[in-house]
Amino acid sequence: MLSDAADVIEPPQNATVIATGKGGVGKSTIAAHKAAYHAAQGERTLFICVTSQDDDDLGIERFHRGTHPDGPSVLNGQGLYRAIRDRKPLLPIREVRPNLDVVPGGEAVGELLTLLFARLPLEGVGVVLSLARALAPIAPWYDQIVFDSAPEQDSLEQLALAAARWLIVPTRSDNTSIRGMRRIARNYKLVRRDLNPHLWVAGACLYGSNPTATQLHAEVRDDVLKELGANTPILTTVVGYREMPAVNARKKGLTFGEYAALLPASAKSYDVAAGRAKRADVVPESILPLADEMDRLNREIDGHCRRASAS
Ligand SMILES: Nc1ncnc2c1ncn2[C@@H]1O[C@H](COP(=O)(O)OP(=O)(O)OP(=O)(O)O)[C@@H](O)[C@H]1O
Ligand SMILES: [Mg+2]
Image (cartoon, rainbow, N blue to C red):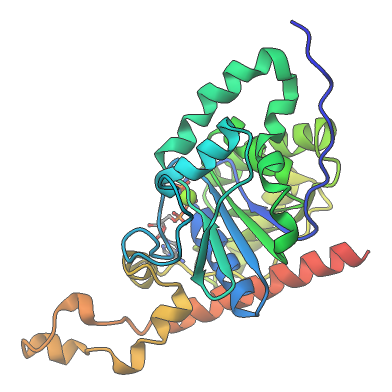
């Protein structure tokens, strides 16, 4: 079966994908916070979820945030699916936060696999540029673009890698997470070689680990360099494992910083004991270090990308 050679689409200057081969390591949390971070700095930001699970970290669906485009729903991955199916520009949900537009993920994103596979005989490897093509017409509106990526799903991972300029690889410290990086390393090399020579690894970071376990972190860093290459920048900020505030913030559709801002007015454990409040109303104190670490991680990622762009 013959196909045309793929065109090259130069990705937008500040387009970053958060990806790693393994599920559940914190990709979506980091991606949503990176997008919110840039928007809070006053940069026009687009967050694109190339995932078949919608974590709704920003509370778009559950709390009706943002202005939806006219026409059929773009929730649950349908907007992303239709843009690629109909070869049309992406239609984001506007102003989910000031300066932040979002193309949500969800089940329909999984249906892209069948669609892309059906186009493969005629379009060849160029199908992997489908997302880059749907993004190109609206990309100039944005200062920053952040992609969340799907776990253990090569084709979806490649779609996002083909549309981005920077790759950030988070990992946990366990062996399966480290081995999972082989998948992203392989996809990174393939996409860079065949479709997107502008793609670079901006850095790898340890996520959801005890920040004081420095010996363990040094070992993990060695493993990361083995899997991703000796020149991979390793970020120094480690976001700690703090399940309760992380899970509660997601349930409320708030970023860690937004959730931390509720702490001063929050009910306390003694209010729960006295029957004046429910446990769910208590904002845990541990949200403060979590919000601070996430903020530091974002500043470090941003600094790496800016230095790398300038060099
Ligand atoms: N710092 C943290 N400490 C503890 N738990 C966290 C932390 N950050 C996020 N979590 C929780 O860990 C789980 C996995 O996080 P997340 O969904 O971001 O990972 P993921 O890599 O995107 O997963 P998937 O591969 O399923 O898409 C979620 O329940 C999330 O709320
Ligand atoms: Mg995810």
